[in-house]
Length: 362
Picture 1 (spheres, rainbow, N blue to C red):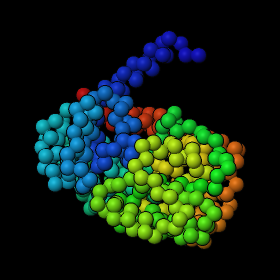
Picture 2: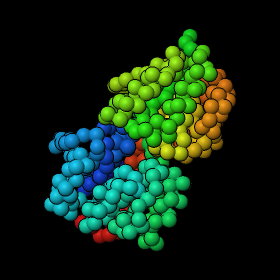
Picture 3: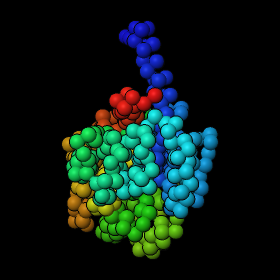
Picture 4: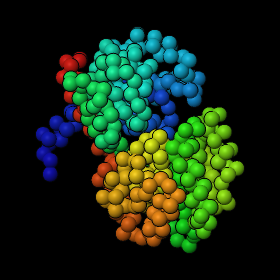
């Protein structure tokens, strides 16, 4: 049991962390809807003096003083640049939460320590673009190798696994008296992601397995996403059910036996939130072998890993069709071991404090 002195010291540390002044620079500003936003907001909510800045093609203007957020369309980049010119130095550090191609932010953030979180496997820009980065945070071993090619000796590279809210996503019973149901919950935004996330493979899989029900959770992200939606809707067989505008993804996990991510190399995040959330709900997963999370799925025996081909997916699905309570509990334990949001936040806060202290920022 902790004594009063330990508890007081811990409370003091928490209060000190809450006062950290961090500027977050990202793209989407959609917590509870989009994966990268979820990760940014997990950090943002812990810091009472942080602010989130955004640039995106999917909105023109987004502002809330209460939520401490402001975002512009890419065409309004000059406005965000002016804001940084006036208030950028008021932050103790800046955290770019995007990818290696976020040149807008790399260009303007330079007067305080800068962290760049690499959340996709997009290729880097010229090495000189990263001269102002103090710390790279990556999620996978492959990203670490990628960043090592552009980082100089003074730039640290740290790996931090993403996390999900284990209090929100709780273990649910295996569905009874219904067809075996597979969930896919990773909406493509552009044409390359349609192929990259394996939407064509899902159609082929459903056609070969008419006895299995497939749920596709689809959120509209602008005109391109709507065009892809119509394309998928025309081609899908009858055992694919498209679910639009889901207000709470938790309800879908309750209705499904497994969650699938048949991603190819250009599919997006290597730790899809739908897979981590599924594990937290006690649902085993089917993941392609190009995803970083595949290694954990295989080692912890919480699903099947397959080559992103029709034959590979068919074999994996056959192996996983028997879902029982022991596998369900193993999936939950895996999420608790690797994908705790509390651990994710704490590791970032430690990195913030170390960087601020090391650069003598007041």
